Image (spheres, rainbow, N blue to C red):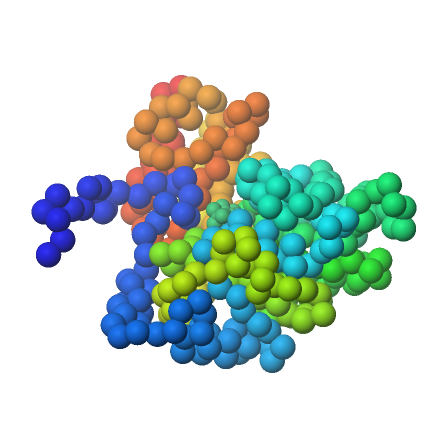
Length: 354
Ligand SMILES: Cc1ncc(COP(=O)(O)O)c(C=O)c1O
C-alpha cells in the first residue's frame, strides 16, 4: 500500500519549463514492472542489457555498442573522456550543454579543455570549427581532438544529415573525431523524418549519447559507440565516473521499451507537434517575437519582462536570456493540445493587458 499522503503533487498539472519535468511514459513503467522480480546479474551483465545491444544495432548498425548511464552529463563526460587523451581538447558551440550547463564537469571530471565557438543558431559548421581547429602539433595548445555537436541543439534547431556529414568529413580530415550530444536525438529524427542512422552512423558520427530521460524514461541515457576505434577504456571510465548502474537492467529495459518499439518516435513527434502548435498559436500575437526557427520541441520568444513575470506566476518556464528577455517554452511527450491552447490564450491575454 502506498503512503496515504501520496501523491504530493497535482498529477494533471504541466508546464513549459523542461522535458525533464515530465513523468514516465506508462509503457516504460510497464516495462520496468515486467523486468522486476527475481534476480539478475548486476552491473550490466543482465539479459536486458545484453538484448539492448541488439536493439541499438537495429537502429545504428552492426558495429554499434551501447553503454547505459544514469544521466546526460555523465554520458557526455564519459564519452568525451573515452575519445581523448589528457592533453586534448573538444571544440563545441558556446551554447553547448557541455559548456554552459554541466557545472564544468567535462573540465573537472574528464580533465578536458573546451574550445568554444559562438554560433548564430547553436549549430557548428566546418568554417566555425576552423576558428578553433588550429595549433596541431603545438605543445603549448591543448590539442583539438573532438568536435562535439548537439542534435537537436540547445536552441531548438536541427542539423540536416548533409550538415553532419560535412562536419564529420571536416573533423576527420583534420584528424579529429565527431561526438553528438543526443539528449534530444529522437526529436531531431522526428523533425528530419529519417531513420536515426541517417544522420549519425551514415553521416560519419563516431560516438553519440542517446537521450532517454527527456523522451519518457524515468532516467537513463546511453553512450553509443559507432566507431570502436574512436574510444578507449570506456568501461573503466564509466565506472570511475560513477556512471555504472548496479541494477542496470532497469535502465536497459526502459530503452527496450523506447527503442524496441516506435515509442521513441511517437513521443518525440508528439512533443515536436506540440511546439509547432504553440508556435502557430502565438506567432502573430502583437508584442511577441519568435527569434528562432522552431525545429524540435522548443519555442523561444522575446516578450516584455513584466509579461514574462506575470505568465511565470501561472505557468512554469525559464527565462533563457535575462539581458534580452528571451524565454524558452518546452513541450514534452505528455503535453496536451489543451495545455497548449490554454497557455497560448494566457500569453495573448497577458500581452494585451501590457
Ligand atoms: C543538450 C543536453 N545535453 C545533455 C543534457 C543532460 O543533462 P542531465 O545530466 O541533466 O541528464 C541535457 C539536459 O538538459 C541537455 O539539454
